[in-house]
Length: 316
Image (cartoon, rainbow, N blue to C red; front, top):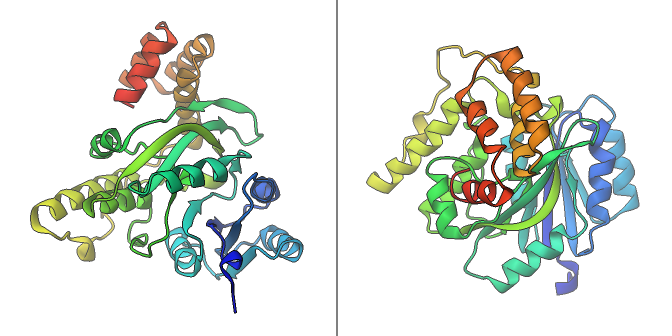
């Protein structure tokens, strides 16, 4: 018979697909957390590199690790499998190429314990490249009222930084082959849940080719569908998810190098690295042409950090 002490406080769910290059560093960052009452649920989506060898090695080392293996990659189904078997009071997300900062669990568990009215929290992130070098920061820190307003326009939550209550109420909808997290947050809003961002840095968020799924050609389509479904639920009490289909029209996929440069510039802006911002924006203009958003970032790079933080808090 399991005792209360045997039940973990946190269940961290990690979908893995060919992540061998980064997986050991990611797992070590969990095992070295200052808060240690957790379980690790690894859902392997058919890796063909050395990921499975690493998973098995770590499972032999630590009994808190659970592994389930699938034959083909599907992030949404993997996440749902993890949610179904998670035993913790709280669910934490992680991507297999990201890194947890030492006090991530402690900070989020303390906050959720003290604020029972809050259902989900995210936080700030240090952005790193494929080699682990810092690119800049993503600064977060919003109460639930601001988050609710922002979610109707954009996605202000960093998916691998979130922790939420394990009530078994919400699962990812697998027809959302991307923007599945945005759809999840909006469904939580529909059900009256309060979502916040704490300002603390919780993770190192890696921008790598292996995690480039977020830039697949139809991302904007699914993002807009998630928003459309939210307003359908508000008006009619239900949405048209069952009839959701891939768009027929092919859309041009954005290159990794272009996206990588965009994220670097945005992260440098929030890190107040003015010279680097202007240098990289000039590179962007030369490679990809004039962009209104980049012009705005160039202008903002001349402003004091307090002004940038104010704009970031109220707009980004």
